Length: 463
Image: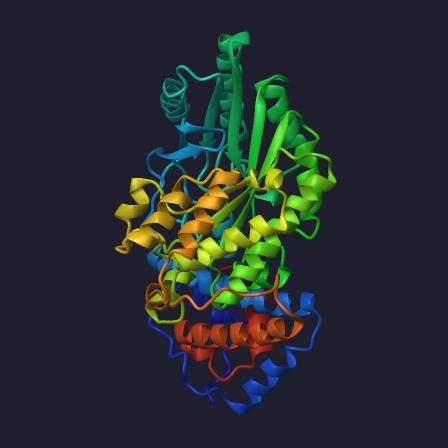
């Protein structure tokens, strides 16, 4: 047993340079620790989440501080996205400069994301350049889509100051007045639900004017709290559904909910079932409010440097989902929701800005050589949720030979939606054991402490 560290020593350790030595995921754990983790299978879910998350935040903070500079925010960047309402159109999404995601600074960030790198404050000049670029791409279109975002959350005051947000609203309002009755202006942005307040939404609506359409993207990732909070490290408030309702009060507005596909620690069947259930849940929430215009973004996982997913992949503990599993998930969604609802499910995450590729981001399907899988990839890249998209995907899916399915590691199709109670208990064990190995690798002097003791220490220490 190692000597038990005192909280003061732990604080010192958190401030020291650290490395990303690879954990031994196969080392045998002490019997008393195994028993403790087994007991966590039976506690209330909220208690399990509260125990695990401080350790996950410390793990994420360590990964970020070692590798978080690979995607920086020192200039505005963009990438082109297909328009869900116009097959002939692509729209630019612009991300303004910044000092990284504010949630990452406070809680280690989400396990699949890397908007952690330092950059610089966004300026009015950045806004002007970005707006001019976005406006230049609106010619000959009735709907003028202005898609402008911060690195993490548009509504976080340390990412974009209130004054700069007000200037953005002013520029959008002026542009809408110029467009007049010749078209509609749609402002698209993204933010964390914990930053959504009546005050900020009112400032936005008053600033852009009553006639500008508004789309607000928010990350939910999974409607299963165990997956969302102990693997994704999303950190959503308990009343996150009410935050969606706050957004909806400032019409005309649509909500774009992000659901991730390819979560670590879930096997192929589980990640399909979790994502399908989450997408279905979000559609039902939207339709229960009598609004069918909201979108659900089916976000296919990619592998970014400086993330837990990338670290696990390097240790052979994670691999990106394959195209067959991705296609199956969408086909299952198509079976469970109406064709009208399917039109509100969009596919993202298969491509990204050049700055991400330059930093080493890997995307599902980018190196596909099989003609059959290339056909699926092409359908997903151009997915607009239309009945013909579903038919094309089904045909392409069925056309993939067994040997190719086996070669990419696909073992479906699978039955069911969501995780079973027993699967969730097993997942608790898998996650806790992995995090113990990780945290004692990053902070070796913690070895010998119980899982609960490590959790309590990290609750007291700012990561």
